[in-house]
Image (cartoon, rainbow, N blue to C red; front, side, top):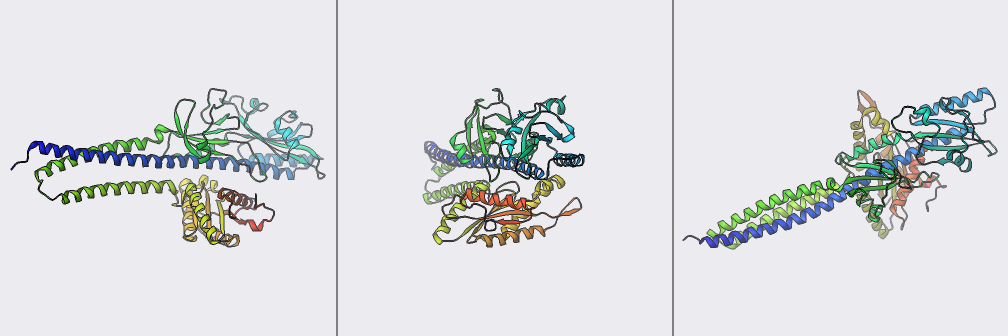
Length: 521
């Protein structure tokens, strides 16, 4: 006997409605989960680039300050022509050592330029310039970005864009401590554009992302210049400042996903208060979600039609046990649930690991380190934090290319994973910066582990362009006291890393070796 058409239509409608409802639920859950994951993934990527750019700015300014301070220790009051010639050679050598020095000069205590690179401005009076006045009153002076005043017509007579400088100056002292002059420099702000080009390599998946640098007055130093005399009328939300990323409305009326970082004061160094913002239009950042939503809608429609077909056929076989139909439905639901679970796991991996080395990224490191701290507190165990930075890594990239540089980073990541235990944590927290958190290890043990890692890297030979080379690392080791913030311990280890760099690189400096360091700081 034929099944009545109205019964088939009724079953067709029930199954089609059920399939459509199920598809809507799965699509909603999937897109919401994907939205959260992509927001975290894109935001973390932008924040990571902002942090990397900030670190490079701080490191670059710190290195220039150290150059000036080191040179100032060699400069004495010239008493004859021979000593003047020696100082002129010293200035010219320092000027030639770094391509972004626009000008170097020595002044008297009254502000007269006594000698300078390429003899520019010799005899000029610079006593009214902030860098001269600052160096006469402070141990050192680092100024904010400004336009060239005295040097614009000399160094850039036909330039399309005006020169912009950052001033670094230190006092020149006699053996009795009295100041007899100032050693000053102008750094061409163009050096930051090279940092930007390097940082943009971390934004290959976000081609529309922009890097913006502003000072404490919200003056745009790098990036799209707003119409208000270069001042950006924008206050970042508390969420962006606290998390390091978030969605931020912009004065142009659009919303952007913004990664945020700011320069920090370090021991014996306080530079300009700069902020780095890396932004991506929300419409571009969440494009994968929109595409996923459309794909899910088409899949949902197909699922609804499949269910409708099942209802049409099942109406003709109404006598079949409902158990078979129930099992079939449960299997299909389980498959889609498993697909959703696998998708979420993949997004979770992308959000917590560094794609190049397979190590944890900075955000996952902080989360797992805090969990490790709680476990160590319960068992009364020591924890030690190690900050690692490859020596002269920029030279490797410049000499052999970033493909070879990536091989070096992968090798260090592999050595770190092989050396640490399952209870320890290894992460890549910057371009060539790595972090280890060692459970149950004091500073001496952690230093020994780090030195083994340094030795294994030092003994590794890399090849490029028929040339073999080796790479070294510097590291700082600091213990993590109970009730201390992890980020503060990272800063302490980072300071020790800087000391290792100052000692000549290719070494490990632990806090117990430097009793003058303030671990309570």
